[in-house]
Length: 215
Image (cartoon, rainbow, N blue to C red; front, side, top):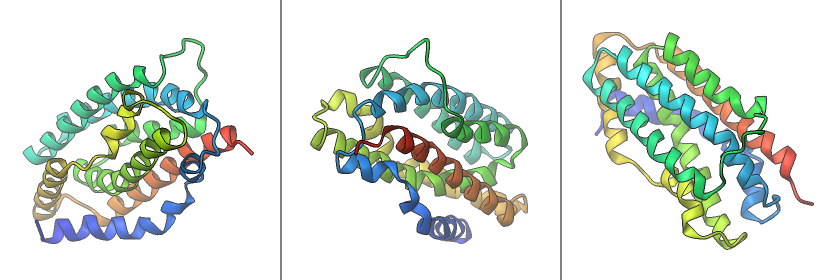
């Protein structure tokens, strides 16, 4: 689908792309230079993140005026539920786990947007961020098999987020276009949200890179 919405999403993704390589953990994992324990640490953080994002996306769905936006966030929430079910194969939840601030800044921002963000602007930011997140997850899933010898079941969480979702992207474009047509979308705010999403995304990976680099 082409049009102003598609052009805006593509432009925001292109603006963020130069910083994709600022992720320090994924290259370490790809080369087998991260400690094996990092995967359990990712899972521990993700148990909290997925549950929080699930609720946030449902809140955004309830606040959305346009049907495409409601469907987009409802599909995201459903995906979080599926993803949560894939985490135990990677690592069981640890009652004594202490979350890292650098890893939990991302879901805190999603929760803030769920209460304060214009849904269509949030969609632009999420889709722009998911492009990088999907690449990171696909690279980690491949390295888990090739460098660390994990079975497919343990890689399922990363496989899930590393796979493309054209239906979700179509919903995003439709929702953003409707908001543009109605004059309910600030491109400046959408870009700000996207920039912060990327910064918090990188904080997640780089916090773990600092803790689990294997020299």
